[in-house]
Amino acid sequence: MDRAKSLSLPRGGAPRGNGRLSFFVGFLKRPALVGSAVPSSRFLERRIVEASGVRSARSVVELGPGTGGTTRALLHALPREGRLLAIEINRDFAPPLAKLDDPRLRLFWGSAADIRRALAAAGLEAPEIVVSGIPFSTIPPETGRRILQEVWDCLAPGGRFVSYQLMSRVARLAPELLGPPRVRLEPRNLPPLRVFLWRKPA
Ligand SMILES: C[S@@+](CC[C@H](N)C(=O)[O-])C[C@H]1O[C@@H](n2cnc3c(N)ncnc32)[C@H](O)[C@@H]1O
Image (tube, rainbow, N blue to C red; front, side, top):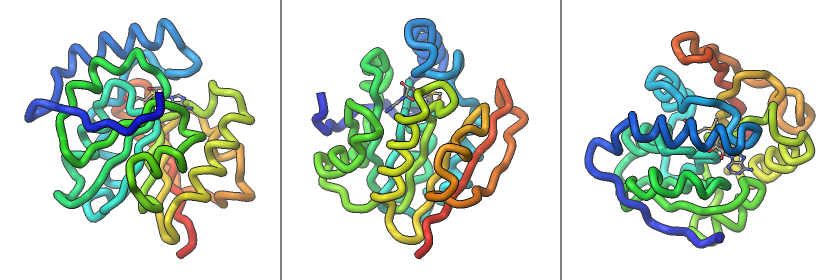
């Protein structure tokens, strides 16, 4: 289903323990799609927030919110007038995501490759920031390339694309499109992940 929908999250967010169990079950069912057995740590969430520049953003898209930990961290940093569109392909994560309650959040069920349709459904224009948790090393390369092309096409001039990854395949999928990334390692995440950042020319 591709409708945009507001979600609810109690103040302070859903209990992290519940998110971890749902995440692990989701991984067991679709390992290549989910790409990790555990959700991002608080250390990685902080690094994603800093790399994305979400604190001064008005329009942000998150690809692959999973059980919503990164979504909650982005919302925590997002200004009051900002908007966050989260695009998730895996309906198994509907229960934990349904616990999010923030009027700035819209959820789109479908593929990140449909980012333009999701933006239109949410009534949003070109995002300044796209944050992606999609495991580009385990999804088919042609799907990954299509997602990167769509992200780059819809990103506002001067916008940022942040992708956190175990492997560096994302940087090899479309180097002619994105150019060289800035890369930072977050060693305190289990497993340690790399945070790739690209900036679209203004
Ligand atoms: C590694 S998990 C990241 C979850 C969460 N953001 C975190 O960091 O804890 C990857 C997520 O991407 C989602 N995903 C994979 N392929 C996708 C696609 N083509 N479109 C949207 N979401 C996708 C998976 O279902 C999963 O929720």
